[in-house]
Image (cartoon, rainbow, N blue to C red; front, side, top):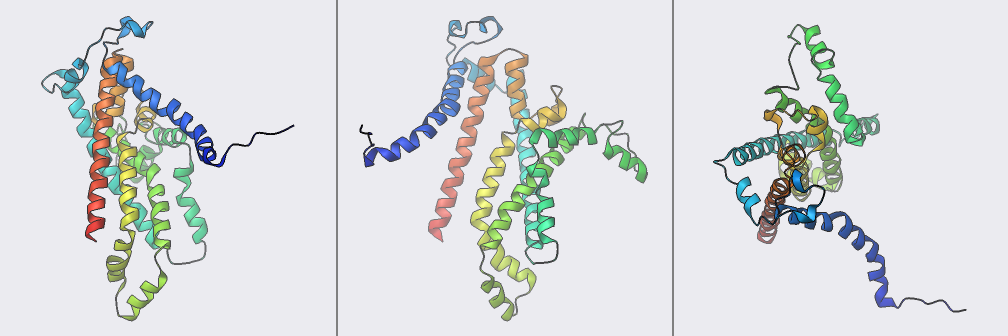
Length: 302
């Protein structure tokens, strides 16, 4: 009995085949399905038989970007809220991660334990972490209002309603994401040779000068990728606002992802929702392309 052995040239393709099939099934086919939906008038009348939905061309896209209309104006407002949410979340997550990673560079007793504790929010499942914050921000029995009442600083605020909803959303997202920034920056700091700091110290450079002239330039490659990843995650974030506010998301915290969901599943206009999703995808692709172009140019200039 003989056993057939694949020739050497086909082995790499055979090894890549499962990942390729998985990528096609999980990412490519849903994307193509969404693109098809965005070109059709797919609403509640055609849910049972999607293939019978009439072709709408680019009407859904025109409807979504008509900023003089109610739908376009609401999408533009949601985009502005998302941009502010992403900017604040990325900035605070990166800043907290950088401070924590820098402070924990020097060895001390218990450093391993502190690092582990800092990573707990990121290790928790997203749903669990956000649910904890939802209970904490509850107006009646929440820990935040109880603490404020104990300090005599009020304690009756609606943290999940009105304008406070945006602050609650940012705080929850930062609490969940900053440990990832801390982890990435800590890995970047450990790749910086200690001899550079020793030589700078011998030359009389203070801690601030060493941080500005050695740490920040050496961390730049890691920081660029980290900021891009955090931005993509936050701009696409759906789980945090959905779990935090359920389906009653206040307008102050109405992110684009939630707006697309509501346009699709609450108004039953799947074609319009798919068009909004496609526009969001195109925007993020443009951001990534610009980021890669700028980083490539700066790398060549260096």
